[in-house]
Each structure stands twice: as C-alpha cells, then as structure tokens.
Length: 311
Image (cartoon, rainbow, N blue to C red):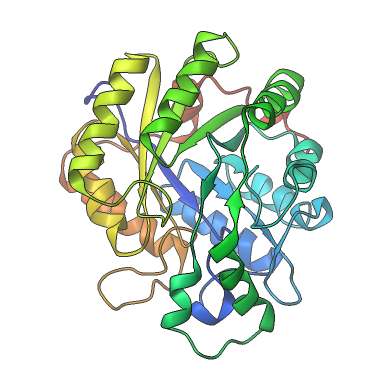
C-alpha cells in the first residue's frame, strides 16, 4: 500500500471478547448494535466489522435471525461496507461461526489465518463480580482453549464464502506465522489480490504489542505480498490508538471499535464506537492523511458491492 493512499477506517462494533459488566456502553441488543454501527459510519468508518449478541444477556450468538435484526437496518441507513465475523465466539463450532455469513452473503468477512491460544482469563484477576454468570465462564474457559482455524477450515471458508458468495476477506493475522499461512493460500491461487491483511497485536497467545513487532509484521508482509495487499492494524486495549497511529504513518489502514478496546483515553471508557472513530479520524487528518469513503474502500478492495448482499 502506498503511503499516499487514503486510509480505510474499520470499526469493530461489539465483538465477542468483552462482556456486559466491563462497560455499560458495549452494544448488546440488535438495536444498540445497529445504532452504534450507523453512528460509527457517520463518524468516518468505511467498514463495519460485526458480531451478534444474545439480546437477553449479551452473550455471543451465531444465530442468523439475530443478525437479520440489525443488518438490514445498517444497510438502509449507511453505505458502509458490512464485514461479518467468521471467528464467532469462543467455543462455537465452525458451522455455527458460518451460519450468519452464509445467510447474509456480505461483501466482506473476517478470516483468521491460524489456530492459536486466545487467553482472556487474566481479566478475572481484575473483576470479582459479574452481571451474568456466563461472563465468568467465558473468561475462565480460555485457560484451556484453542481457537481452531486449521488449513482445512480456511480452505472451506475460502471456497464456500469466497467462491460461492463472492465475499472477500479481512485476513486476521495474530502472529508472523499467520502471514506465511496466508502466503500459502496466495501461492495456491485460493486468495487473489487485492486483499486486506489485518495485523493484530496484544492478544495473549498472539504477537505482543511491541512497536518492533509492528515494523517486523509490515516488513514480512511486504516481502510476501509486495504491492498486492492493503495493510491494516489493530491492537488490543490501551495499545489501540498508539499502534494504529504508528501503522497509519507507515502507510497502513486502521481498525478501532469496542471489540478491540473499551477506552477513549487513559482510564476513560468510550461512550460509543463513534467516539473512537472520531478520535482516530481526527488523528489521521491532523497527520494530513485522507480518509477513504465506502465507495473508495470498495474500489481499493475490489468488493462486489452492497447491492449483491442478501440483507
């Protein structure tokens, strides 16, 4: 990606990592997810990365019926690109993880590029009481959990969603080896450029949030993919804003959102996804970087268009 290109802002609206007790501002119901997604798009996000939550208790759900309570509303109110998770939530089967995307046939989906430990359990040291009991179990189970994304799993998603639905992917790379896994699929012709490489820092089990790692991941991606990819950066928690800012200066796109961090500054809970988008947009513009519109992002990523989805 040339440094002169416009910056795509992705907003990950709710995710499946954070739980209701952690922030009163985390969107949980279909109405809250739709409202915050639309507001984030109006603030400058061109891509909306979406998970579904059980409206009764905020737990992650793969239910397509829940997705369909907010996807059409988002499409009606914004031109932003809808990007649906295939990672789902911890403990979901691959079939469950694909249930929503296969019904919605979105322009984009996330696709994790390798199996990994994905540790959330250290949060238990900071939280003693929870609004819902599932939250404690959700964190504790990651002590003995592998987030499964085998070569066969990835091949299947590329075939079913990529070939079958014309969906393109946000390739989520939590470590250097994931970049080489992606290169394997590129070499086999199963992934064709241009593609979006999302490098992820600060998850326990993945590469650490060290600025040298950011530069290393960029160097390896350039070595493997040359000019055939769009680079994007996300970092967990307090690392979010400094990491994505550094990445943007290096020619990357950025991802923010309450999936990745609940904060809008040191010790200050973000009151919405739009607040985080507004902050990063202001930083980008103060660095003389232009923000890509949804139309421009579609062209950069060769997407099928919003009129080709099924919601």
